Every structure is written in structure tokens, then in C-alpha cells.
Amino acid sequence: MKRLFILVILTTLLSMGCGTEEVEEKPIEENGDDLVKQKEDLNFVVEPKYDEADWFSDGYAMVGIDNTYGYIDGEGKEIVELKFDDASSFSEGFGAVKLDDKWGYINEEGEYLVEPKYDNAHDFKNGLAKIELDGKKGVINKQGDYVIEPTYDFIWVGSGDMIGVSDFDKGAGFTNRDGDIVIDLKFDSVSLFSEGLAKVQCKEEGKYGFINKEGEYVIEPKFDSARSFSDGIVPVGIKNLVEKEENVKEEVELWGVIDKSGEYVIEPEFKSISNFKGGIAPATNMKGEYGFIDESGEYIFKLESDSSDHFKDGVARNKSTEGKWGFINKKGEFIIEPDYEMAWPYKEGEELIQVRTTDEQWIVYDLDGDIKFKLDSEVALGRISEGKASVFIDEKIGFIEINK
Image (cartoon, helix red, strand yellow):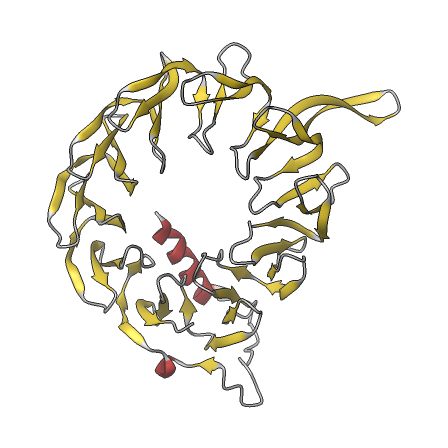
């Protein structure tokens, strides 16, 4: 669960540099920087008292003390008593909770939708949730009833009207939201439908193609790798022999982009191409040059970096070749220079960016790259979500209000 990542980040922040080597104390800011917030400057929703916590989701946050877990609301009130052995974030009005080594679901009043009986329980998506029992996967609805009995080895539940299912002995196919098989289990693997087409791997040659919701091939299986459709196009990979030096050839996977007719809109000449979003995609050419390309395969800009997230609200997190984090705009310009040890992935709609310096100070920027505030280095900041963030102070976790 994501809280494990939060705890690793928060506890690491205060433990770094605590070995035998003496570390020089660095001031947060000199010259009267009034952007630095001390503990007493923070607007606490809940004072630090918890050992573990998730960020807010669906209006609630999971919290834990002494390995027992419950939930708080946006005002910091414990709406579900801390009595469970484990718990996950709320999704679509329900939280998965663990008791006596079994998982079930509760509603916002703490009442059981399903009493703990599963080996694992996942978030609800579009009214359905995947569960696991005795090594098999199934699906339940918001009434707690089985849509699909736990009989499959793999299940993929998304926001669409088709559910991907896989049986080791039979193969992979699709059911509808009622659990009826609508595309036979005749593939080696499947991915969820995107823009009306689903990526499938055929059993015979192991190649990837794309089918429609009738199970018919729209694009025949001939690719060695493929992503899912977005913006009406999809990156695909095909293995080929490339001359590395005179009389020496090496098999490499070349990436290009096809449309829904299967025609190349970008020839397979790249080392890698990620999915397109808003008409652009991160890509690396065979020279190792990295940047964002448009739908014709031309670089809009190149970056001295290893990777970038997709753009959200006009910004994207970027990791430099030195392993430092910054943020760029759609022109490839750094609105926040890549000088930071760590950066939370930007969450669409939050309008705030979080980064951490090498001397363990958290800084919050707006989308123009202007500093909103800094935190005292003794305060570790969790991910901002729904206008709140967890803070780690004196080995305990609380929540603060974040004003945009």
C-alpha cells in the first residue's frame, strides 16, 4: 500500500546522515526568509500523534497507532475506530480493512459491506472491486455480491464496461460487468480496453495486436511490444537487426507509432516511446537523446535527463542524468530547476508542487515555479492531497491544511 512509501520517505528524511560521520548543520535560510514555516506556523487538522497514515482519498485518510488502523475525516475526526489490523484508502465510498488475517469492506460509518473473509481486497473502480480468495481472483459490486466468483488467476478491473480475465489453463479474455464471458479466453494475455481497442497477445507466436469489443482483430498480432491507445494512436515495438559496426548486427527493439488502422504515423526508429497525452510523448532515439515528440515524431524539445512524467496541468516532473528532480513546462523550460533530492509526483488539480532539498528541507511551489512556502527541516512533508498533507514531526504523523 502507498502508506509504506510514505513511511519510508518520512522516516528516511530524519534518519539520513545519522551515522558515525559528523554532518555539518546547515541553516534553513538566512536573511529573514519569512517563507519558512516552523511547527507553530502550521495549520493543523490533527496534531502529530499517529505512527502511520495514508494521504487523503475520497475525503478520508487511513491512520494507525500501535499497528491498529482506522480513518479520519477532513476535520481530523476519527470516523472509524482504530481497531483493524490493516486498512487501505477509501475509494468510491468504501475502505478495505483487515481483521484476523482476512480482508473485508466498510462504509463511511464503519459498517461492514462485506465482513473480513478475503485474502486480499482492492480499491473500487467504477462500482466494482477485485478480491482474492484461496489463490484465485474474483469481482464484487457495491452490494457486496459476487459479479465474478473467485475462479480466475488474474483479473483486470478498470473504468470501462469490460473486465479482463485470465485462467492459466484456458487463456485470457473478457467478461462484461455482469461477469458473462463476451470474448473467449483464447489469448495468451490481454490489457484493458482503451479508446475502443484492447491490446492482446496471441498464443501461437506471442505477438501483440488489437481487438475490438466483438473480439475481432482490428490490427493483426505482429508486434513484439505495445502500449495502449491514447489520443487515437499507440506506440508499438518490433525487433529488428541493426548494424552496430561494420559486418556486426545486433537485434534491438525499435519503437514507432501506429493509428487505429494499423498504419505507421511514426516509423519504428526510436529506442523507446511512451504513451501520448495531449499530442506529445516522452521518447528516446537510437542516439540516446531524450525529450518529448509530437505526433509526427519530431522532437518538440530535448532534455538532459533520464525520464519525465506525463504533463498534468501544464507541468511535468523531470529527473536529470545526475538523479536530481525538477519540473518543466510544455516548452521544455525548467520552471523548477533539477536541483532536488526528491519530488512527489504532481497530482492533477492540486496546483502545488513538492520537492525536498539535499539538506532535508521541503519546499512547496506553485505552477509558475514561485515558492509558496518552505518547511523547517525538522518537519517532513507527505504528499498533498485534497488540500491536506501529512507531516512527520518528532516521530509522529499529523495532518495540516494546505492553502493553494
